[in-house]
Amino acid sequence: MSSLKFLGIAGSLRRASTNSGLLRAAARQLPSGVTMEIASLADIPFYNADIVEKPPAVVRVLAQMAAADAFVFASTEYNYSLAPALKNILDWASREPDNALLSGKTAALMGAGGGMGSSRSQYHLRQVCVFLNLHLLNKPEVFANAFTSAFDAEGNLTDAKLTALIGDQMQALAQWTLKIKG
Image (cartoon, rainbow, N blue to C red; front, side, top):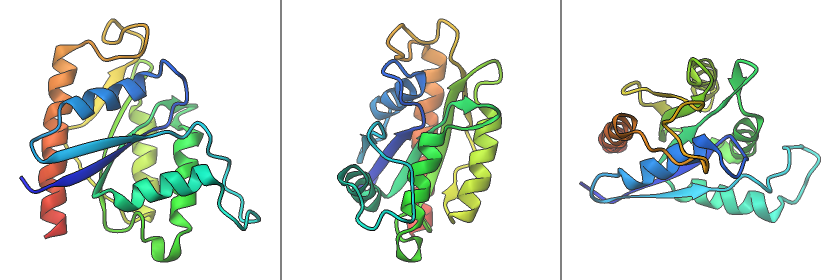
């Protein structure tokens, strides 16, 4: 497989985030030739058009996005929607000229949440990604219940079946990215 670089971004800012745990599991399940960096959103301020000079934290994550061939978004569910931190960095990125950091790139979605495992937030995130012109991977879908024994106290994924599904998703994202890149 050709060399590809994925960027993982979790919407949850908690230290023991299960969504960050999903990204760590994804980073361990990558196909040969694929690397993945995980961005930190902890110090990203809210997007504000009045901010003329981008804060260093925003510059850092936008540079990571520019270098990425594909994205892996792990979105928890807040009030039937995606996490504000994730939406916020997408808003920052979309303001770059011609939406150059996002438009035409591929992405996969995953998430850990309540009983439905972030399904509603993922479907809402899909709507956002349509506007951003991201090419989303349709299958396999990864939904995890964050309140089960699938995760340890630090938010690390411990479930073998879910880990294998994430591996399948990373393989599919790599193939999808190569197809889209042509």
